[in-house]
Image (spheres, rainbow, N blue to C red):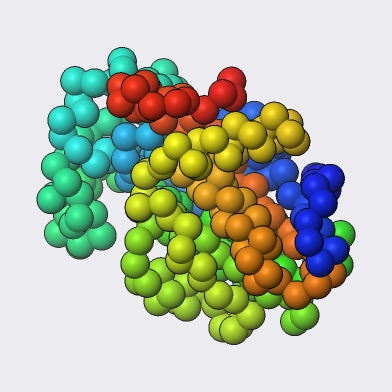
Length: 298
């Protein structure tokens, strides 16, 4: 569903947001897209268990836990931060995943960095037996295939396609399906330029660029300006934005419009990648720091 924003911008620029957050009540946005073909492949291989990786407030962990439950799989989450094992009740994301039946394995941040190493994966196989592996963030070739279905025929009219970037899977699918006249802009939620190489693994087109100025300090980092923007945007448009991904992307696009980055009369499509379950966890962190919270009920 595309929703045009009725905001007057300079140079006759128009913004439309693709409400991928509405495609499923729990496994919304890019998580739905990334899991679609992974779940079909797991069934084709007669796997009984899904195993994946994520942090304390991971949208991916919550989505895999729910999708596994709904599709008859067991699920295992390898969670970054062994100090979290005694804090499940205080963590809305982990609590939800546990209620869906996910089994947790908490590992130190140092050990977590080895999550792609064959020796680490072999240890997991010895401990948990046969499983279907879904990478952190869900990004693999099957996920890219799912994300290539985000853009549809009705999106031909747009000049720019903008989306947040985590592990690079969603933007890779969009790059592959964008038309020659369209430019894809990615807004990383993480610091650093390493994502360029990750994305190039899955794409051949050169119709894209990463805008690296709107991560607000890095993954999971926010400030009062961003929280205020998300709350005002919701009040004005009745569209909730998450603070980790889409909120930063929309903030960045509107800031670039004000700075005359886009040519006059540009039609811009913003991809809402979901992630709204993370708002509850972010508000827990904000309250602990006595900072303003996100005024959106999820």
